Image (cartoon, rainbow, N blue to C red; front, side, top):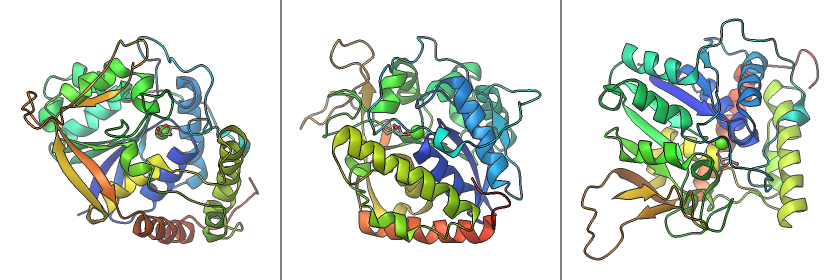
Length: 321
Ligand code: BDR
Ligand code: CA
């Protein structure tokens, strides 16, 4: 039986790649793709999600969830290359959603329809997941697992010295999710920083005559350009795609149970994730399974292999992007 997935995304180039790999994994059933504001505003995240789904046009169309602003707004003013994940470069056409359903409602409905069987892959700020938890008191007991791309254990942040981007965007929501009883897996920067892709990755992508190759050759070239201009690096990370691979190929990761929380207020540390790693921890309840290491070489090969399968399934371009 296909594995039931909800993908919660703020597309985002990295999110778009993770979406593509999810849609064309024959062992997965993507029930819904829910948008959340983060890399882009809520409205743009919703529009980009629709546009990507229309472009990939998968055999089974997932439901779409529309994003709404986090309660405190998005705190991100200027973005670094690591989070300047703009899809505008692809200029994908999109039609307005006729009856938009809020992302958190779509998430709750789908989890209720398949109790204990749904894995939520959360690749953006945790706004929607926290709202789903608050909307339905049984949600945490009914969801199969929530896999989260975000946080940092032993390494610094990527949007501030202390905080990782997704947690920083809505730390109050992240705190709600961390504290919930739902089974959770965290894929922090400690793991995702290990996947370092050089320019050679572009030549490993599928041919540009196909939908997948055409889109990602363009988008990933833009991502390399951003990293070079803003960080002075010739390499990129794919934090979201790596988190998705933790769901697809958990055997390539090492996980440890940990007790973690989120700083929601600090002047310098807002959005930092804090773990009790003392010899005699006082936080006794392990609330997260955390990816602490990864076979990055194997993940890289697996991404390339899956992209080629996705390219075969998605087919050729009708009109160039
Ligand atoms: C996260 O921030 C965003 O730039 C990416 O989409 C990813 O979800 C990494 O910190
Ligand atoms: Ca993301």
